[in-house]
Structures are given as C-alpha cells and as structure tokens.
Image (tube, rainbow, N blue to C red; front, side):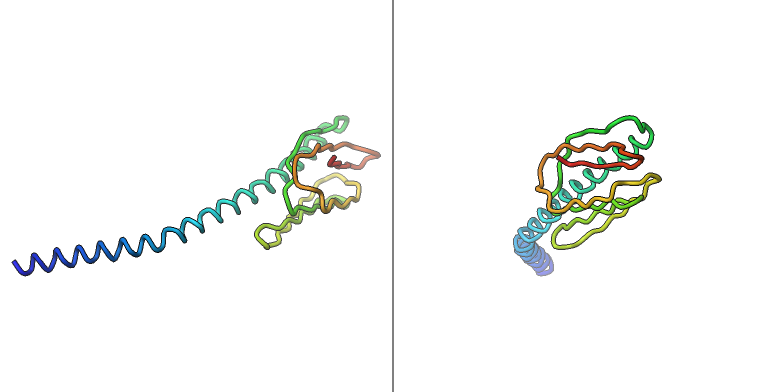
Length: 137
C-alpha cells in the first residue's frame, strides 16, 4: 500500500513540475516562432522579387523583340546592381546581409538600384542597343 501511495505522489509531483515548466517555456517558444515566421516571410518576399527579375530576363533572352512588364512588390532593404553579364542582389533581413549573384549570357546596361521605396512598382525589362535594361517605375 505504501508503494502505491509513493508512486501516486511522485506521478502527481512530476505532472505539476511538468505543467510549471511548460507554462514558463511556451510564451518564449511562441515569441521565437513568430519571429522565425516573420523572417521567413521577408526572405520569401526577396526571393519572389529576384525570381520575377530572373524570369523576365530569361523571357527576354528567348524573345529578344519583346518587352517584359509586370507589377512587382519591391522588398524593404533590397538593392541590386547590373554590370556586364551579372546581376548582384544585396538585401538585409534581421540585421544580416545577404548577397546573391546571377550570371546571364547577355549584357546589361550598367545600373545600380539603391534606396527604392518598398511597395508595388512596375517592372519593365527590354532590349536597347544589344543590352538589356531593367526599369523599376
């Protein structure tokens, strides 16, 4: 009988300690998950913008007499540079800098896009004098 009482008391005490531990750790875990989801959202926003420019440039390579136009969401803290055959993207998420460089078989007008206000912009990609030009209006 004493063994059974000891087991019940130890089990009850273990459950109480586990409940106290979980009520202490869950708010911190929730905060971490919300922060991580915000990070993923910003990262996805940057990747969507980069993919849109990549798609437009590849479309223009295949259809040189065309113009690619689309409305894009320009992310916050995003800059990019076009030089010769390369587009280099620079962006900051949660105080961490990221660089991405993409090379293409065509030449670009040498341009630098910095400090563009985040939000919806018109993207226009077209050929001028055997060079590809990207405009964000």
